[in-house]
Image (cartoon, rainbow, N blue to C red):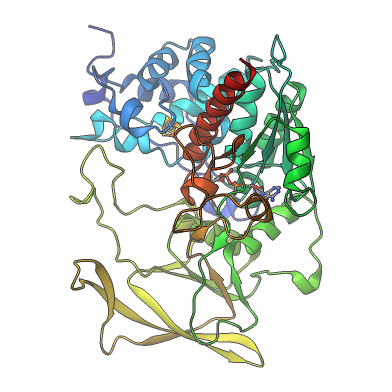
Length: 478
Ligand SMILES: Cc1cc2nc3c(=O)[nH]c(=O)nc-3n(C[C@H](O)[C@H](O)[C@H](O)COP(=O)(O)OP(=O)(O)OC[C@H]3O[C@@H](n4cnc5c(N)ncnc54)[C@H](O)[C@@H]3O)c2cc1C
Ligand code: SF4
């Protein structure tokens, strides 16, 4: 028996919580607190070291070796804990901060109680590793002759580049934006992920030999023919940025915007960029309505509150989730249940089962939103569809509407078109088990291939694509 065998029964789960609301709303810095060393030790002790760790095999898309790093963190053996974590999750500083932790949904301790705070343990391992100087540039000892182009620098592109560089390939990452990082930089607000964390990793990757070419739209600024003549393999990691629209009367009014341009602007402001007045989307003194109750909507909420919005509504068409795991998502699945982000604790008015019917304008700008409540009922095929509840119509005054309804796919991509890659019914390029598309030597990974998802899945998919590229180039070279 180990010294903490019964800890999961004796020590309750704890979360570190957030900085005080009144203070955090005054700045853009990260809101999440951190455990003390003692708290972390207690929480790591709650891991039961299960015979079959579902967190590792079923929960974490990266298959992080969770029980082992939990145990090493409990013992304060940070170098070994980092070695184990980095063996599957070398860019773990991102997951440690913003992963929704599907591993915790599959934790055995969660079957009859609360799961282990795995993400917090991961976070402490990462912090200790950086503090102790364990994360240093490690260029490959031997270089291979082949060059690989990675198109897109979000988490999928970064993971692909990291793993290929580690295997000795010369990697160039092309990025259309002015700085690398994809949604890590331009989508997720600093109050969840400070950009110094991203810049620290980019510096390490550059010191390891990875080249970043920013401000280059591959397919428009560089042709596929040019890229093919310079690189032996290409990996497409352009993300899924086509936003879902809201086809209601009044959609064309001023003051109605997609969430991503709004979030991107604020991330640029925090990075000291000046947004021209004519393009600026800003919530100060506005009554904001966010349509879409997901994480992107929550990021808009926290942003609008920090910008000084007068009032913020967040409307979601789906019903309010149950307080505890719904029977429709039994363990070890990711539980459908009510969640509250740091932004929700900061303010705003959240409503579910709300369908927007039309937007009304005044002098060309949105002024009022008309909506109704819906119930969800099965249609003839058994599919749940929203039905308007008679007499439930209501309207709210609003002068800024943000559409956070998710993403439909990668959208138009000149590179994909030039290569005439085979696509599926959703327009996504097909890929084989090694993530190679119909064009030999052209691979695809991340949201661009899987649809809008999570950072942890983009990292896992990028690692998978890197293995595919390695196998392809070795076969070719043999
Ligand atoms: C607002 C928001 C908040 C989110 N928060 C979280 C969170 O807290 N936790 C979580 O796990 N997930 C979160 N997600 C989801 C997560 O960010 C994505 O699943 C992930 O970033 C996908 O990674 P990716 O590398 O595939 O694509 P992206 O991050 O979208 O990166 C794609 C990159 O490719 C570039 N690109 C596209 N086409 C070209 C081209 N032709 N030439 C050159 N470059 C090109 C783009 O500019 C972009 O930088 C969030 C998503 C959004 C929108
Ligand atoms: S990456 Fe996410 S799912 Fe995997 S162990 Fe970390 S928090 Fe859990």
